[in-house]
Length: 82
Length: 153
Image 1 (cartoon, rainbow over the protein chains, first blue to last red):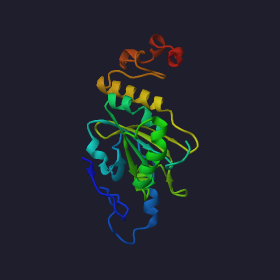
Image 2 (image 1 turned 180 degrees about the vertical axis):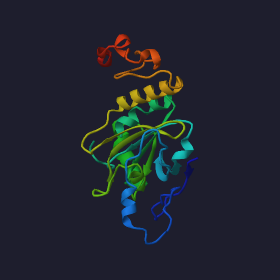
Image 3 (image 1 turned 135 degrees about the vertical axis):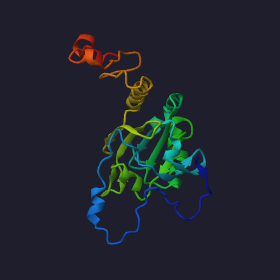
Image 4 (image 1 turned 45 degrees about the horizontal axis):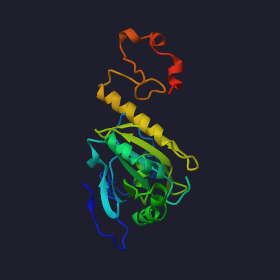
């Protein structure tokens, strides 16, 4: 479940399950090929990210929300106009 | 995002959790909530505002704009099994229609509850006719459903 943490000077890291392993000399072309659009009917890519929620800073993991519907909304940036 | 915040009680009533994601830091999220969004909706943003500062989440979802270093306006509906059921991606100048997201969720929830035995035709809303896919319906949709129904309220 989301865990609270105190804000520090370091930006909170994004922890992901599918962290790319340190296989050096991996051609960059591979990374390009990975950027295809995800598909309906397929699992949503999991992630853990820092979040601001009702006065607190927490870490949220998408897969921990299984069992309920989730609407995931990306947007270009805070203080943008739309 | 203010519109989503305003509709949050409706999402919760439907058993839906909302997450927002941008490349801004969580500190900027706080200031945006405190100084603008809370004034627009009359209360604090009720959902978790996630930070994706390296764009890696957006990249996984195929909506990260590498050139601009920001997320495009992608909206994903994920079911209780963690499966993506629908998405919509808009370029930055055009905002979403939150009520359409709610309508789609209502449709997906109905389909899930009926275990696929009913489907929602174009323009479906709660209370409107569903279709029951089966051998008898093949080639016969025109007899049970009229195009005009797609545009009725």
